[in-house]
Length: 227
Image (cartoon, rainbow, N blue to C red; front, side, top):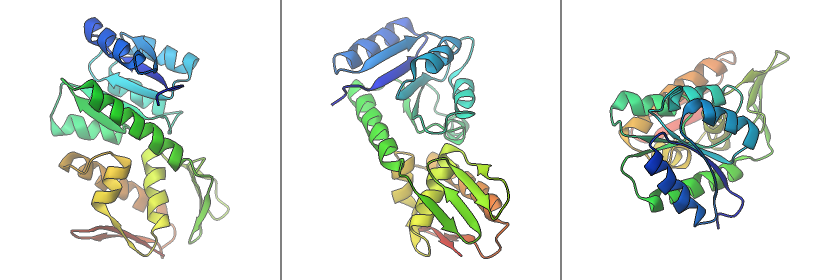
């Protein structure tokens, strides 16, 4: 089931990193283990992994900083954060910079493996070759680019692009909040709901050139895109 999945693991606790690496390798993952953020960034560039599992607190370069640098050029690779932190601000920050999921330490290997497979499958499904129209906008989902009439295209982030994709697919219908949170974030808890609100606000700003387009908050249910 895990054949050909190349996973980059950045974990500075040597014993924990080795345990995770060996456990994943017994399930046929190919694991690249790094003990700091700088090494992980170099391996990311040279090894082209399928998914990243990043400890938040690392020497030389922490997990959030590493994820920001990677997201500057790569909006598609799935990222899971490993963290001992549980503060709301830390969780929201992780999602807002492009993280797809997070696990609080200690965690079970079975849970990590399930989350990895879910993200890999989700990423494959969402790489649909579609160019969509929305009012005077053209949305190139594979390239994650939004263009208004003849103006230069705007590059969307990974999460902005996938959220807009589902809003357009369900245009003029209510997009169930819980459903989309589980699909894109893997959970529908308070922290991810706050993160989704931030991304909705960002999309509204990007779409405001066409006055007919609205993203309506349907209280208690979700969002509806209209044009």
